[in-house]
Image 1 (spheres, rainbow over the protein chains, first blue to last red):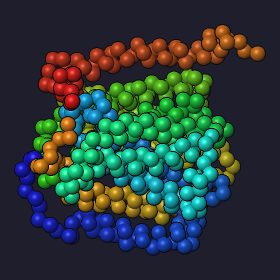
Image 2 (cartoon, each protein chain N blue to C red; image 1 turned 180 degrees about the horizontal axis):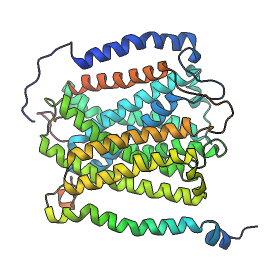
Image 3 (tube, chains in turn green, yellow; image 1 turned 30 degrees about the horizontal axis):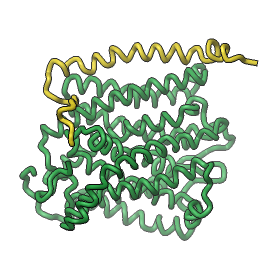
Length: 386
Length: 54
């Protein structure tokens, strides 16, 4: 474990003040949502039932939480143990991300108390059923994957041994679930050929979602590694040089993934014969997404890896994260029902604020956990699980 | 009615052309990515089976 001075515990820090303001303003908004209904805090209506919460909290949230299965696969299944220091943070981020997705869906559903009927009367032919079931199962799987850290913290050796022994099985199960539901989130839109803009609609949309989720996961792990080192450096078990090596390796993987994603998106345009639409206003917006937030970060990753520039990898990761959020907002809000007369939706500030509250809550819980459990470092009594 | 051959050679012709161009473009992409890797040999971003975990 890296020796570093633990900072003096202070309650009044810039982040704590920020979080307190976010929660103080957000609490009455939550009350309004649950006691006055969706209309009191959102600009959603009968024509636009999907808004910022579905696009950001759910669609983008699931993609950005993909780091857990990507890193667990790399380390536990492919044996890339040099990336082991980032596995637990990635799985924890993924787990918290999925919990936030479930909470976000709860906020967005008109009658969330009817959600258990999904299991009582399963729509086995529905892709939405698959997504719902998998998100629940995968959340549980990620909890199992992160449980060795919890038992190490509690010093429950026997339970830790059991949980480590099922890590490999849980990882395999998690990969199967993730592959299916990451692509199924996109495949859900296959029933909307008349609603989703032809540039975003494609028979390959499930593949687009899956490949882009890998890039999103890798970018989030890179970005999160930087933030952890910057703000929780006293807990991080690796030094800057090792983090830079990992960052560059992740950069190489993301460059290849984004290159693949860019290629299959182009094939999607060719396959759909939608070249002519690229000159329209929506086409230009599509190009902004594809060139500005896929091709550009891909080139940045290429140069950064070749020239050994970890800072540039982190910058590219930031653009990639923004790009994934933009893509998910496009397919679920902006390019969805794009021809609908009278569609005039822009999220209310309260929608942004409640989403900000979710993200802030996730960061607070993440910080609470990593300050106690061996997530960013290894427990002196146990070390690596390999 | 469109035949299978028309579908392959006419309707989806551009898909194949774009796919071939992209596959060819992948060669310089890969070469550019790993060129310095072979020269530096610092182990960054490379993974060999001897470093596998058990």
